Amino acid sequence: MTRTIAALLATLSLAACATADPSDDPVGGPGDAQRGRVMAEVHCSGCHAIGYGTKSPYDGAPTFPEIVAKGHLEDYAEAFAEGIMVPHNGRVVMPEFVLNPREIEDLFAYMKTLRK
Image (cartoon, rainbow, N blue to C red; front, side, top):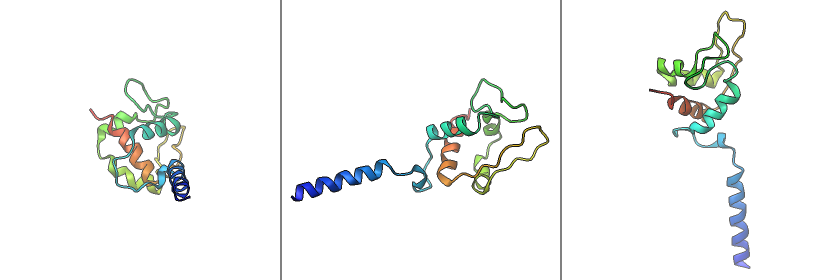
């Protein structure tokens, strides 16, 4: 009986870990570059080139390598947390993005892989 209860508790613990939301992870780690790349592909690549060797689909949007080359990615953290909006006079206006701390870390981890 004790073994059955222990096995059931172990199974429930593993199931809870498998379904945990990664955005609930404690903040302060290095971020996950792969998750950051996926996020960039889904949300950013329509306007920005997110890697080397291509130009941005929207002429007014800097490439990720250009953004990274300017340095100081951490300066953008607050803007992403509060809702980044980039004013410009182009025909397309960058939509407002609000990211949670884990998403910011993941995006920056990916962008840091673009540093030369």
